[in-house]
Image 1: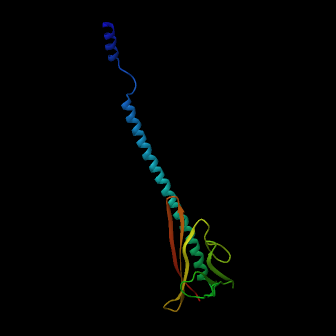
Image 2: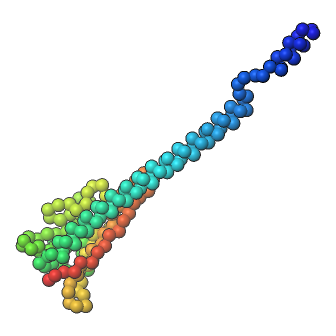
Image 3: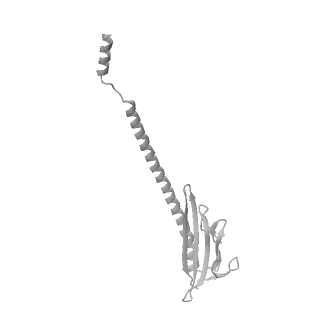
Length: 173
């Protein structure tokens, strides 16, 4: 008996190597918390980057369409009768103009895109939420102008990006 007691005392005095279960649990829980925090920050970063890229795409498409319409209207010889039999009034959803080469160009929605006779001004990547509307009026000085407005939308997994575009174009004739 004395031998076993001596053996037990000697066994307790020797330092043990390794970690206790509590230490392992604390370290594991801290690592899990750290990984969850990092992954949520990474996902937020990815989603906000996706939203930003989508917003830039919508803005670029809208600016391109608006610039093309402004250029053609500004340099038009005249506003002429469109396919809805309207010439120059407010609230038109299409407008026709005679360009300097004598050809007639009409801006309208076609197959879900803003288009002219010869080309689409927006692509399938964006949707038209509203418009385009063309308000053709005469200014105080007697010079005519056209107000163009439309809205483009694109969906991303966690949001919908919508941008409104409008401009006023003074007519030469």
